[in-house]
Length: 107
Image (tube, rainbow, N blue to C red; front, side, top):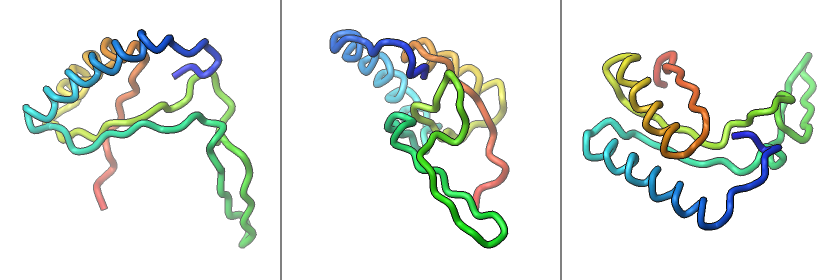
C-alpha cells in the first residue's frame, strides 16, 4: 500500500472489502488458503536490531519507502503460476500491488 495517498472513502473501503472477501472465499473453497492478515500502518512498527551484543529498538518502518506492506496471504500452491494467478485476482480486488514470494521452507 502507498501510505502517502489519501485513504479511500468508507464506501470505497466497503466495496474493496466485498471484492477481497469474495476472492478469499474462493481461495478457501479451493483449499489453497492457509492464513491471511492485515497490518497496521508502518508508523506503528518497531525495529529491533542486535549488533555486537547490544540491542536497539527504534520506531519503524524498517526501510524508508513509498510502498508499505499492508497485509499478507499464505497460500499452499503447486507452483509460481498458480501464485501469480491468485496475486492478479487479489490485486484487482484490493486495488493495490501484490508482491509474490515463495517460502524458504516452513519451520
